[in-house]
Length: 288
Image (tube, rainbow, N blue to C red):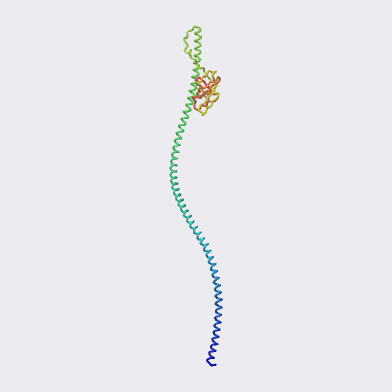
């Protein structure tokens, strides 16, 4: 074998060794890349799962926070609306307060004016009360004087009635005397009251008194009746006898007879004295 042949064999052997080394290196590198690819792919899947989980959590967090933001936004709008309403209410209350203050000032002014007027009215009423007191005292004196005069007039009427009764008695005695003189042949002349029939004098008591329906008519029942000579339409005087010392005879009124019974009669009061109360036991007479 030649030298060149030997060199070629050596070169071939070296190249074979190099190829084997290269093939081993390539195999080794290929195995490392595959393992790394598998690891990286596993890491990628892990990262993708983590990213997906994180993304889901983020979406959940985002939804929760979005709902919270929406709730806070709604609450903020509500608070703003409440604030606006309360502000308007405060403005209205302030306006009302100003109006009340103005009204209070006006009322205070009016009250002051009314107080001044009330003071003037009070002073005027005091003066008027003094005038009324003086007038009342004069009225009381006048009433007292009138009552005294009424009692005096009634006493005079009683005296006049007694005198009229005595006059009637004298006329009867005169008539009797003239009749006796005529029978004896005397000449006393004609009797002036021969055809006059004077009503019989009546004296009695009040049995009872009461008001009719409506309290407008006062009915009085007296103790004299038809047997005593009383007639319907006759007018009787009612009075209360005094003791002649401390208590005077008091005139109470007049009653006109409307119904006559044998032992009693009923009439209506036509005239009544002021402050006069007709009671059971008061006197009635036809002399006045």
